[in-house]
Image (cartoon, rainbow over all chains, first blue to last red):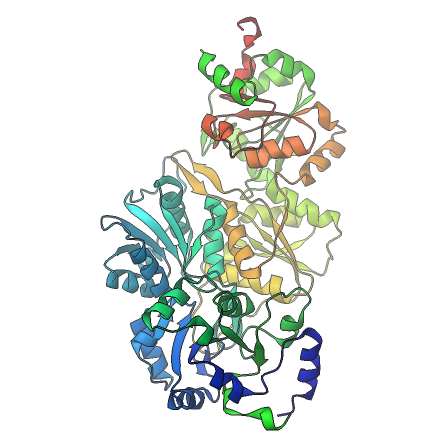
Length: 311
Length: 311
């Protein structure tokens, strides 16, 4: 692959195209991967991903997967990896559904309290595994509001946190329920699994992301959420502790500047941006962008190619 | 009514309770009223409102009504006023649905372009009266998304503006359609009828307001909207010009600090906060509140009582 044009463009703004993959691989112990836009797009695996993961594992590197997508639990994600032909253990996968549940556990969320969920089954499953009672979620998908005189929604006064993730079945009932909990239950927490503007929920289009659902609740509560997913460092600290990994020996690989790369930089990791997802070269080079990765490359499988000899 | 306690509290933070209604009435020519929380709550008229409006009109004052609620057109609002026993002309009513349409007209929105609407029939009606083609709105209320591989929504490339208002039938289809227009149609405008956090859509509860729907689109587009309703001064300028009224001779009466009172203050009007809507005395007095009206009172009909002799 000729990289001459890209290289000269990159030199202008100082982010090098990854020409020495070998050097990067040797310099770190762990690769922390974003999923959507790095491993797959929608339901479609990106070329060369299995071979790249195999190569890294065969060289003794630890691989860990972290996604801001909160629709699935770790268990459901493992099935998705498997269906795409990727053999990954549940303990290697960190979706933001898990991050939200682990956060609540870490602050000793009171056992008698409940969590209202905007989002999918994945969040409810992860809450349950942490011993926390979740309500709402998919079962509120068909609920309707009728503004007749005297009508109101009765909300559970024991809700001590609202967790908001991506929800394709978002409706006004859910917005109002979450709003009531946050505005009226004293001390009720507002937790976002992620604030991603867009996601690749199919391979044919960019779709409005979890940032939409979070934005709706910000708009009605005038509050800022605590964010469990990237770029918040909650999961970075958790992973570093769990696997006893030094953050400086991690390379964060992602397709988003404002989540993945910012997350890696804030955590003190090396960062590699792949252009196979939402970020284009011109977005990276835009004067409006202030988030610069250590390296960028077209796609993950470029790690298989040692271009160092060519340059 | 005893106002002793309230008065002494008010003195602490410097906003006087309205004790001299007569003086206020004499000092202005026009009363600009917010509706929800001032005239009515949900479908219920607040006590003494008809008598207060009659008194003001009989004293030669101009009365004008402005609401951030965008679900109705001026025509539909007139019917609501009538149903509640208030005789008001269509030309005295300025809902934010009208404000959005008038704004687009004022910037010579191209005739060949369309407007995608999140919100009710009122916005579509006002757009039509301005000769602008609106699409979306209620007819997209039942549309569903199925994330099967290859699926995408085809959006109209001729959409040159998205207008977002309160929409109790908000769904993911509408969020995605609006997001596509704003992100992908070059120069597409993002207009909010209002960003109100909550509204009194029934008298039994505060409901998540237009700020929710606007927040959803902010979250997916990472853009700030142009706001047509209060506290934007668009309508103030329009009304002042249309009726040849000096802004300093207007008293803005409202129940919200961050829309009504801010709007009045920014416009150089006198401002009167009524506590019959979303704002409580403790919210007004909170150290976090920096928006102070010239006067406050419990309810609109306090204008009927001249307390000046009592104090």
